[in-house]
Image (cartoon, rainbow, N blue to C red; front, side, top):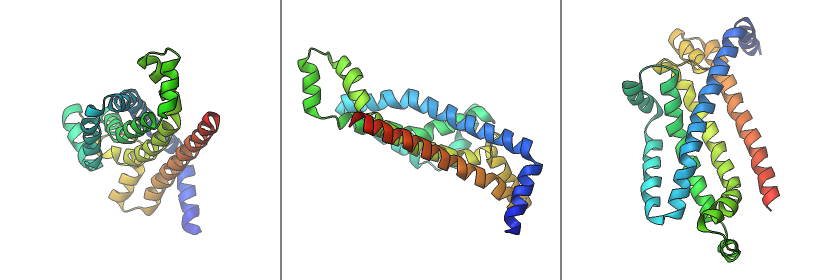
Length: 213
């Protein structure tokens, strides 16, 4: 209990820094995931609509995902330099797989009878995609977004190794100084952020499913 109080005391004494690190952490995650949504959803649609492209697209995002996060950031640092921008690009790559895969699965899971009904009503292939398949695949996309968010919050903790800030700054500093308090002061808010993102997106996912049921 005393140790926990020391962590709280440390966070209160350094609240301005902690708030700034938290804001930086959230911004990195939001920017990285936003970029992944912009790129990942079209890739998932492309894979679903053109089956021959699916193995290539899914394999590429799979390979990106299995690269160790620190190695990925180090490689990106060689091309994009140190700092916030490189961290965002790294989070973008790590968020791609769950978004692409879930978009692909969501579109493929739409009942063929529903698609036939849309075509029977005179919709073009593009209209069926926009008005039927994409809306019905939203719960799958939300599930992918939840996974991507949790991954991104975790990966962002090592961003300080390439010159970015965020809550990982406290963790890295704590490792250097062998300070448990600093490590926990960074790790606890990061874990709470991941839980918060997962909970909020989970609620949205459930509401979306109910609306479509």
